[in-house]
Amino acid sequence: MVDNVSSHVNSIANPAPLGLLAFGMTTVLLSLHNLGLFGLDTMILSMGILYGGLAQVIAGLFEFKKGNTLGATAFTSYGLFWLTFVLINAGLVPGMTPDNVSLGAYFAMWGVLTLFLFIGTLKGTRALQMVFLTLTILFFIVAIKDATGISDIAYVAGAVGSICGGTAMYTAFGDVLNEKYERAVLPLG
Image 1 (cartoon, rainbow, N blue to C red):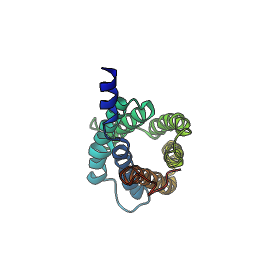
Image 2 (image 1 turned 90 degrees about the vertical axis):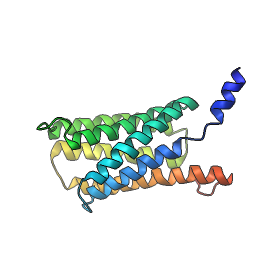
Image 3 (image 1 turned 60 degrees about the vertical axis):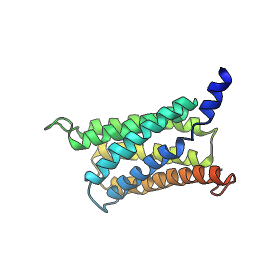
Image 4 (image 1 turned 45 degrees about the horizontal axis):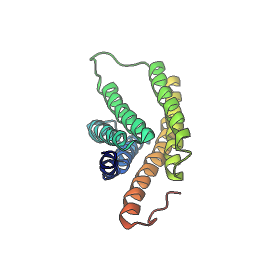
């Protein structure tokens, strides 16, 4: 019985590339907005709901099934981050918007969680460590931007977010290609 359960769990595809791509692509798009290339519109919010949000929650649930506590916690949490981010920006309650201090606290709490998860990646690949390190920095930069009201900090957030999202996408591509070709097509360290 135990062997059947063990072999079934091991036969499930790796959910990490889906979660990393959902996170990475959505983060890059939001970062391009922070760089001033386009506004915060329905394209970003839709990606936040469906790909950044829903797809990451699904990936997180499959990480639970595989027994990967770090992956389950990260993907589920960040999927729910994207959903809360969309609800905040879409105005969940008409006429109510968070002030700068509360937004700063919101992003700072995500920074604290990410710092904790980054420590968990120190036993993983360098690529995954870079994703979590840059994400930790990103959350604290955005927290400072919102808490202080200094909008020019958004450009720094855009640059760091682009690196973070791009690194997540690279890590996902590496996971998929390395598994498919059974060798390090894209080195992950």
